[in-house]
Image 1 (cartoon, rainbow, N blue to C red):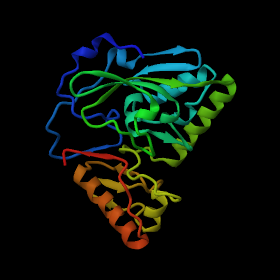
Image 2: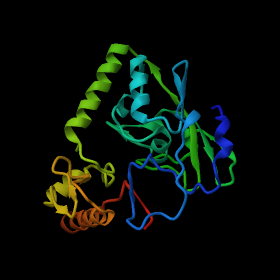
Image 3: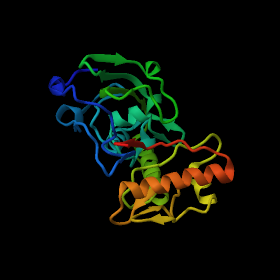
Image 4: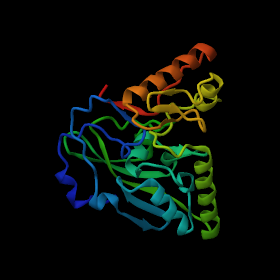
Amino acid sequence: VTLPPRLRRISTSLATSRISGTNLLVSDAGYRGAVVRLAGEFKQFVYEICCVEAGAAVPLARLASDVGQRGLAGLDFAAGMPGTVGGALVMNAGAHDSVIGDLLTEALILDEKLKLHSFAAEDLGLSYRKSNITSGFVVCRVKLRLSQGEKEIQERKCGQYLRFRRERQPHQPNAGSIFKNPPHDSAGRLIEAAGLKGRRVGGAMISDLHANFIVHCGNASAADVRYLLEMAREEVARQFGVNLELEIRLLGY
């Protein structure tokens, strides 16, 4: 994995890795720290034979679309997925029984002391919506292993996944899936079964399309969202004995 020449300009004040604000709830009181947005070389990607090397700031959905248009297979599950490549690796993002970690061959990561490290997938503790990439570490570039497919088939698969996402997930502003799915069940089903689908507090509402999303209906505060997610977690635990684990991350709390 090659190193962008601007990398050394990143400040030591970097404290946390986030997916362009997706999967993130920031306190109404704000966050005491620096927010750095990667750009330039971090938004570029290049191909080798059945591999793509991408900067951390490349939008994941854009990369998935480009990969499919080239007839390469492997990243179609990410069609329409929000966030960036770097943040997706931190969360080991995925859908349709696939995750980005399955494709990873190498990741270039900056530590708190501005030292670069090259990691293989097995070094990163990748599991369901989780990695061992901790606060203070920043994903800079990744190399993903793809396979040769047929352009028509890959474009069709990307289109199918994109339609699936549009039909089954809310269109209103939201932070993504609130909870991780528990083993052999789904958080959305449990929240709906608890009678909370469509429940509203202030300007936030548990989506009436998919109960594992909390949507912004106008003038929502972080406190409104936090209240609803805690309500959902408590009711699911009370009614079904299942402790839901957050998929979104809280910042400033």
